[in-house]
Length: 555
Image (cartoon, rainbow, N blue to C red; front, side, top):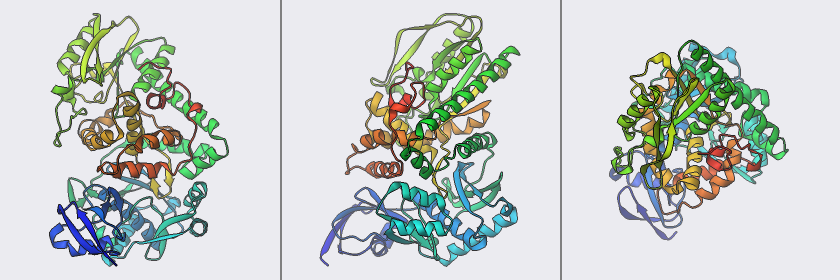
């Protein structure tokens, strides 16, 4: 085999090897220079497993379990270890890995009788046995029809259905200790790479905890999130009722032209939830409170549309809602604080002009007429366009923005005068029983579409800035979410199918020679698991219209 040249970004130099060697073999030859144990590698800005064979010149960047794509690879591998351990202890129990919560991933067993602290401890020990044995994750590629038959025999019906709807000729899957499973992304070379984790009982199931990002030598520590858990659970019950709990079932709806009924039902669920929140506000208002409604949530959670729809519900309760967007109180971009990476930190509380906001809020509450600013995202400046506000008898002031639940924002307002709503796109369907859909992916896709359509920001730039956004959310938003009086889940069971075509087109604009291509490629691959749904079926008041366009609301 002829020599090929690799550009290793870790070492910032070229390496010459014989063609046909795997990434694992290259990593072994560079072990002393790398200074860490890779779990995966980016090859020409695409994440590959270490079993990837090299036959042509490439640019490579090895990654640990803490960098780049590494944490996702670690988590997928940990999930497969959990499934294999369960097959060894209770093969008929059945496993669903449903969503992230409380610094971990919430898991349920189909056989609830198995759940107990003793069972969880035994499962953890079996996973440790797999780790100590340093067993390989073996990648296979086989005709899809044979993989479907295998998964059906093993009781993995959600995987079998998804593969049927995708209609691919061949399918990739993995085996560990003789047990087969599929994960939609790269897996670690072996279980020896996956040694820091925990399992703890949680509600009706248990939490799977990977390493703590702040201290990777120990497992993450759970935190109480009862309101978030209820928000997820309510929607999971809805999913069960309508018969759509995973991507395969959603694709089946789309293929058999039944998706219009699903869309109408999901939109009605949103409306009903907002009506309940409005009724709760009305009850508190009658008792002398709830003059200010604070609507908060992370980026692209749909806060603006939620606020406008809540205003309509409040009007039906005979209130006069008035609205303020905290985004309009951003300081001019040149004065925006920066994060540790040097990016503008729009998630910081101090990206807002708190002095002007509080001065205006005090004047509004005193009954004065106030001219509100408007923030122009294109120029990064705050402007005044004659938008004035004055509270009237029976008015409720709605304040929308990511910091609405931060006590510091409205510290001078008595607690009983405030009603706090937390909005997030809590994705409640999964790809299959062992592959959940991260809420952050849902929000990132919304933001990529919105930034491209309305703010003149490329997908490359949005992806580049997303880690900074996420760090800001962890610091400024998520610590306050359990302060909410009500939680509103803005996700829609069908939305990834609706966003697929638009998002894919925008993601294709990310060039292959930039680091952001790895994330763009991953998101395109992720979207490929959904059968597209025509946007014409989406009502003009839907939260999705905030991102896709065609809304009857003015933004």
